Image (cartoon, rainbow, N blue to C red):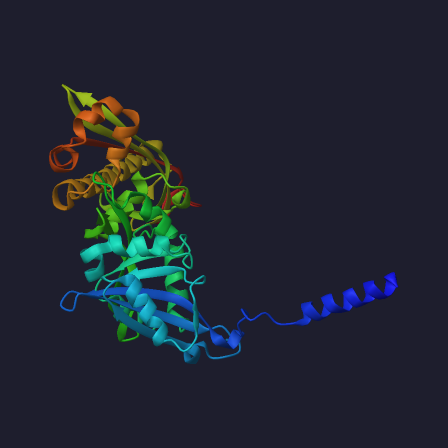
Length: 385
């Protein structure tokens, strides 16, 4: 009898396991959100939520262009717009595959705080996704065609990964932006997505160049590619540790093209007659890649001259960018306030109330750059015999 009971119990359990859960969804009913654009209409005082989606049933043999579709909705808040989007989407939207969010310029200037607050509160959104500010309307940028013929979302992710190899753009994750974007003392720089005419395709294409500065929850201004490179050089970030960037340095009547990387950086706060200041020291290593005239790089004196010329060249670039941060932008994007607060807490207590308005814009910042060229290439005499 006991064996019969066990057999019946096993049959019942097997029958229960064979059933389908009512919470299960067919893959044909799911759409993967690949890119999200957020805009703001100041006249209507409405947010627009636009998504670029891919059917989950898409396989590698199908034309992904035909299965890529866009839906949008508006609302008085971002949450309202996101919910209204459900009435336009014919499938269940899944955000876990969305690798970055694109915020239009109007929305970023109106209230980037509301955008980041929504993104960080939603459990459907990964905090490791990137956040980019669009130069113009985000939905219009989203609808641009890719240069490679791939999904526009995949192409932009590729552009973000390439930032490490040229240094004139930087894109932060939602998590990194949320850490400092509301600070009253400093600003945060992230990526800037723009549209430009392609000479070979004769149509507009998207590109990442320069950056956008966020201060106290709003877009404060734009950075050029050289300014972003300055931030890469000055800021210590493990994701940028392998950054290699190109510089063309004038030396006598020649032009040297160098591949450089940061090997040492130091930023220290000093006090001179009771007034704060900062000393910045940067060590760079550069390899000569090409030169437009013959240069005897095997001569130690000539090599040292080239190193000094490269150091002066980068120094000037850093000083120009830092002056722009202080006097034009008037935003501490380097994070000097964090260094003062962390290492000089007593002095910081007397500065913090006047830091953004009086102290930072007039702060003396001294820059010193030392360049070493350990590799001159295969030929001792560059540019010819």
